[in-house]
Length: 89
Image 1 (cartoon, one colour):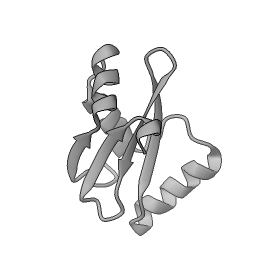
Image 2 (tube, rainbow, N blue to C red):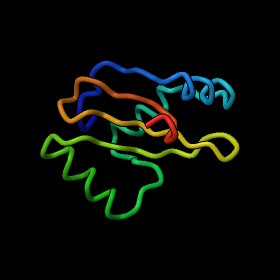
Image 3 (cartoon, helix red, strand yellow):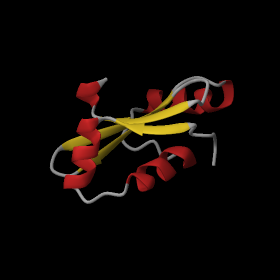
């Protein structure tokens, strides 16, 4: 565990995708918290590494289902982690 997740919330769209893909959100949360950021550019991965150390916002990007993606974002103050569709940002 690299950082605390705080309160965990999910948007309606993310909940729908999780249900449709039969994916347990805890799987994504564990990956996110362990530093498996999913599909990010090298620059975004470096930014996340810095964010873990310096207390900035952390973003992961996971492909799920048929062409869908879910983002997991932990706020800088580590008070909330949100699972959402990129379109809901």
